[in-house]
Image (cartoon, rainbow, N blue to C red; front, side, top):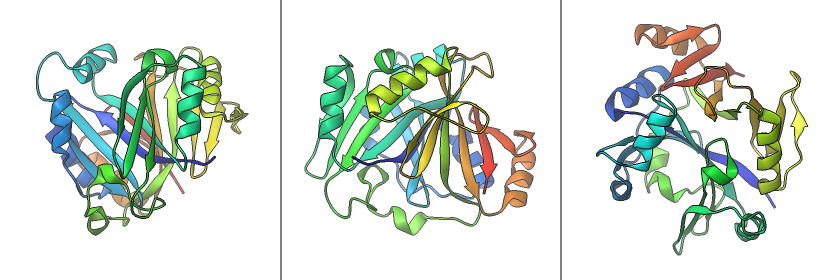
Length: 254
């Protein structure tokens, strides 16, 4: 079985300012706005990051799950980690064995979605999807049909890691390791980590007092100076090689 980190989802109170930050700071372009997310009281924008994707969602009405998540985590922040499985079926069986509820499950001829309930997984929303149609190693239905024409890698090239924070980071790492059937390893700094084919999922202590959630992302960058200068112009918090955007710590690597 193979898993890849394919998409990171952020959630914001207001979509447009975050879209502007992502464009200006990361040099990315919107490839798709999915009308289907309106069903959940959301609007979105999807940016290609090489052949991975950064999505930003925001509530459009009161009383949504997204709005409650924003309240619980005290503002804009990380929302979802989406992994791509070559074969989704073993992970469905594993979720059933562990009595993990599904927040959403949907099947189409070309794409299968399995979103696990965060109260059973911990950390953040974990989604394991399978691309069935087209070229599964490249195509990605949630990014729309024309995302390749919007790829920009002059500033940011890819994701290298997702960082989940929790009061009990070792326990959260063990839980995700059970779900994904991956061994928990230690980083050079001694943090528990899971390795998927193209990235790491790292687990750290709560660093900002906002509780359990997706707190950080490692970005492989092509133009560090341009990115940092743009972040300062936009008034974002910059600490060395770390930029905070939409309540998430983006660490610049590579």
